[in-house]
Image: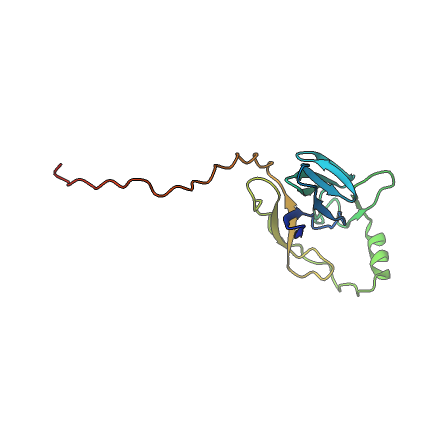
Length: 189
């Protein structure tokens, strides 16, 4: 999700991960300073920082962008792991996939509010698409039916092939006219 705000007439963009791991406010710093302020802490322009173990952020031109450090993947059932489940592991930052036995899976689903499907869902899905951006943060998509209701849905995840190169310095604006126009010669000249 990209949020756009302004602070004292300055435009500010911040790329925030879909999982909303960051619930902070960013604002530009004073004119004589370069950097950004996130949750009351000032970061220098170009500084890379980690507000939590789950995301890494980069301060640039008074704004910041963040990428997730935990995989945002979806694990489909396989013959050796028919009932995968993502769980929080004590002492670890990112959740991990575990495999449940069939009886544990059915017991957990029986406690859920939604009714069980009458039969196992026939797995169907596409491969993840190429990243939508050639550099910086982008999205990859796929279609899969591996969800609670066994319905086809488009799934999205963040991706980054490589960081974007630094932008070159801007050229100064030309305030002069077109300059001298010369007449075109004849083709026979």
